Length: 137
Image (cartoon, rainbow, N blue to C red):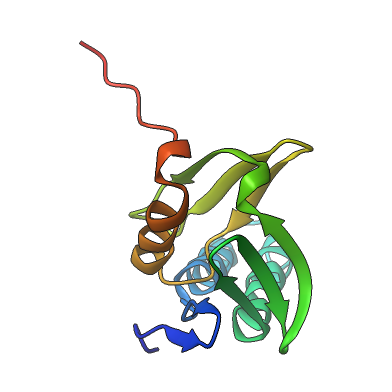
């Protein structure tokens, strides 16, 4: 795992992080000690292996105007920042999720990338749209 981001000619491509898939695979293996084995282990670990595969094939590319989801070098989806309403990283210390809302719909993505780099790029491009944590007083 490298923590360096690739700087493309027109943007930044985030490095992968394997924390979430490995966490899910290990959580699935814990079900081997239950009386329900092996089915919960098979289902949960299979999902973890799917996410592990995705972490090798998916890339997030940040350009000046867009967040681009790429798979094996091909563009899958483009999210223009001008359409964003809000964003937040949920559970950043654990393997977390990126929530962002566009004018058309909300999105919840598992974080398969370096969370610090992801947060840095989001703050650089759409800082004013970040949903702040509520503080109880």
